[in-house]
Image 1 (cartoon, rainbow, N blue to C red):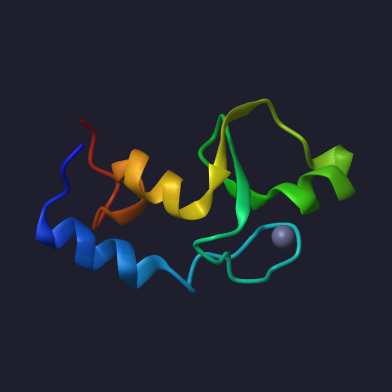
Image 2 (image 1 turned 45 degrees about the vertical axis):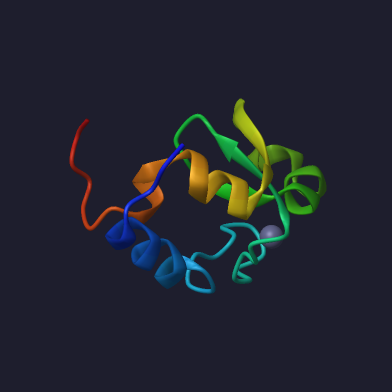
Length: 81
Ligand SMILES: [Zn+2]
């Protein structure tokens, strides 16, 4: 999978800015996260801590992996594919 330079720049801009909706802490690239069906990223530890916040999970892994896998994280706006 390739990623252009502009996408890479935006990807690094989001690191440290995207916050876990449960604990409000910035999500770090090496932290394990879940991506739910409405494309919310949250820490795996927080997901388990607050079961009432659970939605079905779409994917899991490090935040960095999600950034590389899903281009919508580093788009300027919510354009459709
Ligand atoms: Zn969290």
